[in-house]
Amino acid sequence: MQHVTSANKGSSASTATATDEHKRHHYPYRILNVTLWCVGLLALALLSTLVYIHPQPFPIDLTITNTIQGPHPVPCIHSLQNRSSIDQVIEFISTLNDPIPSITALAVFFVVMLICRWFQEAILLVLAVSNSSSIFLSLGALVGRERPGVKDGICVINTIPFHSYPSGHVLHDVTFYGFLLYLTLSKPVRKWRYHWILLPFQVFAVLDILTIGYSRLLRGEHWFTDVAAGYLAGVLWLCFFIFLDHRTTHWRERRRQKKKAEKRMQTHQA
Image (cartoon, rainbow, N blue to C red):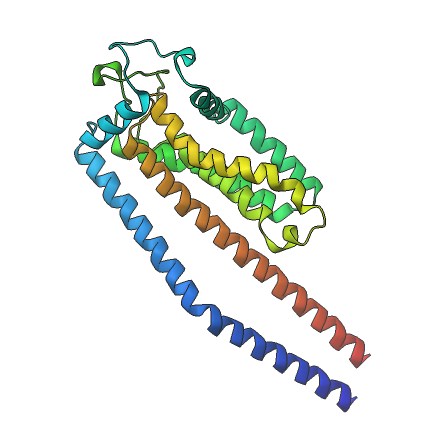
């Protein structure tokens, strides 16, 4: 009995030492990640304040939008037929992130993840995406920037009854596809025998995130600073939920190990 107890104590001490070493190794990276996240949050606050003070489009906003849209009559009727094939594909991707398609996609992924028994990840995905809308609406209400219009000398494809700042489509896509992309690159999925099946989705997710901002400018529904704020807010929100996933997984693993240790102790005592 004493031999078994000593072995358990030695194993527990070894595990604790390994855990402490792991924490010391990753501590500098955690400090760096937190620092970068705070810097990003400060940058978003400064940009939001600047746009609040000057809600009209900046020269860089007009220049970038006119460059992307190209020559056109003013006022104009925006038509996909006047755009290149690449622009039409990009604009189609943008329509996939309108409210109804995006809600449908979220529901489908949620059900699939539940079937795969990824309960924690499914819940965090829904929380991240649904609450990103709250960020969009809250920042939009605080800043109060009007949507671009033909008065600004650009083509506008839709008149949307929401504030322009930040871009909700960009914020949604970075959060939604970013979190799914993070899951497909996680260790359990990388060890999956058929993980290569996910490659087309990974490519699509990256392209969607990279092109959604361009599509918002092409359609004349946002300014460049709106899109920049959408990317920045999306990355901050995505990193926060990735952190939550890591911490929750770590907490669940510690509880699992603690229960196993308690069962072994009860077995030895019996």
